[in-house]
Image (cartoon, rainbow, N blue to C red; front, side, top):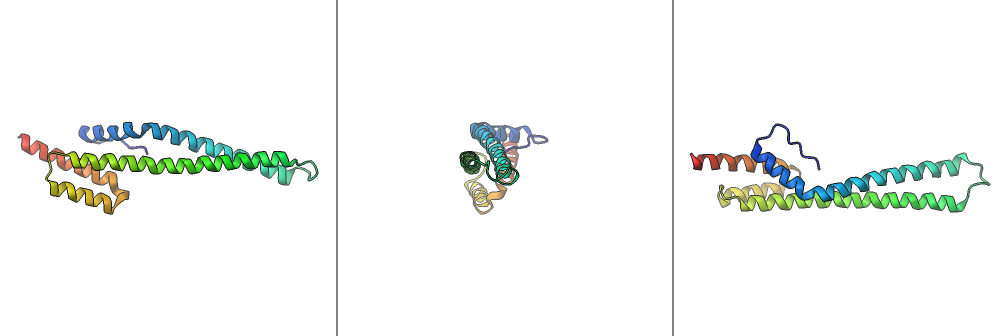
Length: 146
């Protein structure tokens, strides 16, 4: 989950960096798993295709076919683990965002509940709603301090 920090105000960048710091170990693990998975699957498929279709039928070893099939299965397992890590990353991000909204001190409980409801109803737009929450909180904070 790469979060662009480009043209955002400092208070939003700070919160997004906190989310990234929280999920960074999972991101590294996910990246490693997905890369290894891809390489193992491609390696296995290329060699199996070669053994089954390019090599003369009498010279193909069942052990080598089994090895490459096992390598492909390992790649598929790593791919599945990568997908599970992706879900865990999204879940951890969402939990952080929900806690952050709940702990906000500048907005009323009704406004916080509205943001919580938006996040529950539209989980795909979690970041958009979180950034809107941060912007509204910052505006309220500035109004109170002026």
